[in-house]
Every structure is written in C-alpha cells, then in structure tokens.
Image (cartoon, rainbow, N blue to C red; front, top):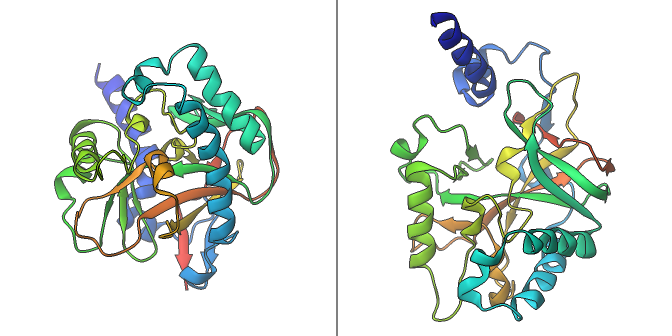
Length: 274
C-alpha cells in the first residue's frame, strides 16, 4: 500500500516539478530538458499577432456560421456525437488540421494533445491556453494550491487553466459577469469535455524532453480592439479584474515545424529571458 502511494507521489512530482521554481533554479544547469531562450518579450513571437488573429478568425467564422443554425442557448447541449464530429470538420475545413485530447505517450503525463487529422504547417496557431487572467499584482493563492495549470507570462501575468474546483468556479463567475447585452464575450465550454472552440486544449500540451523535442511554443497574444465582438464568444479567456484597462491576454501555441497526423504536441515549459 505504501509503495503504491509513494509511486503515485513520484509520478505526480515528476510531472509537476517543471513548474516548481526552486526545482527549476537548482536544475537549470542540467541538460535534462531543452531550454528555450529569448532576448525579450518583443522577440518571443514566432509569427506576428496579425497572423494569429487571421488563423483564429478563420476558425471562428466557420463556427459562427454554424451557430446561426443552432439556438445559442442549446448549443453546448448539442455538442455531442455528430456535433463533435462537426467541430473537428470545421477545424479541418478552416485550418487544415484537427487536434484532440488523448492519453499521452509519456507514461507519467496522463492526458496529452495530438494532431488527429491533416498537417500542421510551421507557424500555424495550433492551440490556445484557456483560463482566467490575473495581473501580476492580483491574488491567486487559493486557486494555485495543487494546481499545475497556472501559466506565467513574461510580464508576470498569470493564466489559470485549471478546469476543475475553485478555478472553474472563478472562471464561470467572471465570464457571466462580463456579458455585454446579448453578446457573450468569452467561452466557457472549454471547462467541459467538448469545447466549442476545439483549439482550447493548450493546457494539456505536455513538456518536451531531449528525446521528444518541442514542436510547438507558447506565444503571448493581446486581443486587438478591432477583434469582432461576435467572435469573442469563442475566446477561452477572461480577466479576473472587471476593471482591467489592458487588452485581453491570450496565449497561443504556434508550431515550430510541420506536424503530421498522429504526432503528440510538446511545448517547452522553460523560457529564459535575457
């Protein structure tokens, strides 16, 4: 019994340690993981923000066109079976590939994200990191307890991508708060097993290793004011602070090379800014 408990703890720690700052500092000189280095936030972009917007809008237009045929209030209840296949068909039609969550090829990682259809070309927006956005000065202590899904941006902004527990409740509350009349300004379906935005699974992309190098990288993306209001309902992010004056922060995953069907996505949890 004790051996099983210790083994479960070992596997959890092996997965979580790459997000634990003291461990990272102590192991920074080791060559266990591939390190990603940039000279500053302005250089931490593989593609321009305009290209990210173009990729997202390609998908959102197809999804929005389909939503016109479905009563908005019942959309999520119908995203099963045929509609699940429809979402992936929409993704393939607009982007040329599909991704989905499946058991990872890493024995300790649990869930991973795979390309299931088509080819992802270098520089494509492959996935989005969903969650509640916290500015560097905002409290996140309770939400961060036993939470391996807190993503830290270069400027200290945090994104809580946990789809369970208190993190889930906070996100749903903030999303409902930010409605503008008939317009929904964020997506909550990423909290379910079938998000209506099929890109919103980036929090399940696992860390790379020397044996499995990264094929995608994180890129910060501030949603421009010109982003169409009717498409904001597919953005899987919401500000914790209702009075935030900053643009909505999103983090997307961009492909570092061509990725073919059957491959698992691997990102890099380490980015060193000089």
